[in-house]
Length: 367
Image 1 (spheres, rainbow, N blue to C red):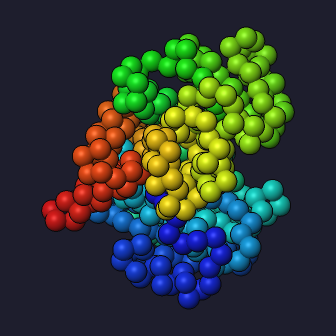
Image 2 (tube, one colour):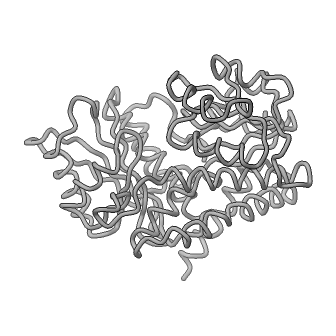
């Protein structure tokens, strides 16, 4: 999904986006406050056309309340598209808690947040996101049964990074199939930016498939862990700026922050395929055309990184890893279908993915 709210917005801009059907169209936005615990949160429900809205809880020190609302609107809309493309019977929702999780997160605050989610009666199902973890969801679940991403000890599936990485790998294989006629990554040079929770699992898949892997991460210990485990198969470069310029790079996998594809990086990118786990990789809508103009194949982020949401959705029905993995494996076919639709309609893959998702949601509303 491309960003529809911008980086810095006024309160008037937020309301305009909320009620503008082409870019907003949200069903419900709830502002939550609990003075006793200090909770300030926004819960945005973009769509329930396919089922209860599903999306994580982001805990972040936003510069303003307007920025928090804008982020919730953008992220929840993206979840509608992600869930639709993943074939889930869920709409899109997202929550953001305002504040620095390192200093203001408490058990009392999380319990208060759980009560807020519970008050929606199942219209929104929450999970982990930036700044929240499995242990946090265990606390939230004490007040709210519509909570996923819990620990196995508390009836959950635990860390969703494993299936997120597996899904990205399937999207990468589909990209190779489309561009080179062969899904194997053997002999291909793949650059992975960000080798934390998801990235290091992705590296495991790539090495096992015979790829030559180049990595970078702002955390030296994350890089060292992988280099020590795979001497000879993996090399490292100083930073992302160096990674995107690596000679002979076949695939670039952004697995860290959003906005990795922008006006500065796309012109110097040496890879022929971009397929990674990071959310909101396109800095603005025009970037997808810039990629196409350079003949760089882009696998839409919200399609290939859907393994995690597939896992948390399955948790609602009694988690089964093999069932989830089978669903995540279908990301290969979905990615190929997007490339075929893009070619047929003469549009970039990101636009093709949006059209397919919108069609599924529109058909659901007619029922």
